[in-house]
Length: 124
Length: 185
Image (tube, rainbow over all chains, first blue to last red; front, side, top):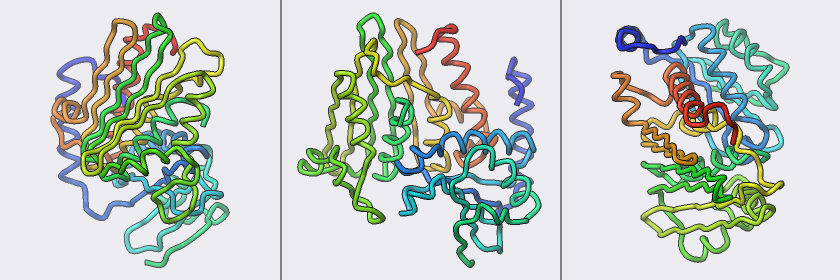
């Protein structure tokens, strides 16, 4: 995102945003990051920062990001789940920022699960 | 946890899990008074007197997944190791206020770390929460309100949209840079 320097930039941004919202479907891909004390201590914030950057870089709009608390798998934090519409929920474990571009590129964009990082799956 | 901002993230996450609709963060960075204080206030479910008294114990937790809860225990450690103070006030049904005061110049005082990344991570996905942030450095102030920010953008700001979160993050970073003018906390 470029810096906003004037009201014109802001209006342009607003127009873009309104256009996007109209175009956006409800069938978003969901990304969920574990943000309990365990997740935070393991580096969840750094993973989130990288995730937001990567989604911006690739100009991906159909993703919604949210977080969850501790789910009891503290030793496998940072946990990051990807839920594509009509597919199994896939949980990735021990995620570090450099894994993020792979997860985004392979799974979110192309629908191929990054098997090496998977720690759990929940059938839909 | 090696940064104060990570403790802040943990506190805000506690507020979220307590069902808060309004969360306020105040950071006062006052090197001239040798004080750095962090206050997180919420209107969540609150705690009774007994919970409140035990809450910094690692074996006190409300969650079901594990029997330990280390968040506030870590914060207490970070405060104690630099001769600071931790005060937790809460009333059931009204909310909780956590105040941590650190000695600014103490060598064991943890660094502040990435506040913009912290706030964005803390608010991610929380579509129902209003967040206010006040940062005071010497005589300069920064004030960010999630409602005002959404109004300013003129769009339906949503905390689960990566592009909106990135805008907020950049905005906080720039404003912090402005009040610090290149200095670091």
